[in-house]
Image (tube, rainbow, N blue to C red):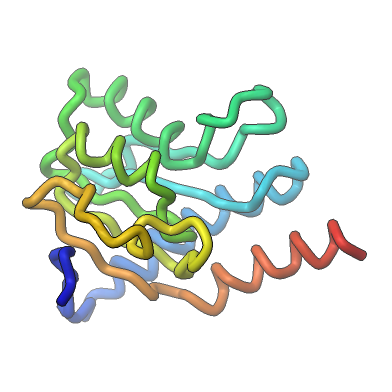
Length: 157
């Protein structure tokens, strides 16, 4: 039994793929900076209000994840801490920290690309999203996973 409010909704207009491609551009910026290539954007009523990519190495801050950067930017843009009418698009399933932060923002929807079996929050077994948050995974999963695989192959190679 799933604790999460997973969405099986269709995306006829292709909005989820469109916005995930923009999140992938953010992930590419992280990759180019030798950061773990995860990118995130936040969309509210058809407008990008926040964006971010991993900055943990650059800022020497383990909390400087893509989602955290995007949450901060969106809250500043909108002038408030709650993101109830917004969607977070992130290239890799959020970790427990970022999922917990999403709870506090009360984000309306989270759409992610690749699953993260080692550190993804859905593998932790307890519900840490806000009860009204809708979750959708697997959007452009292959592209999102490929960037991560390339990054780690380069690091090992």
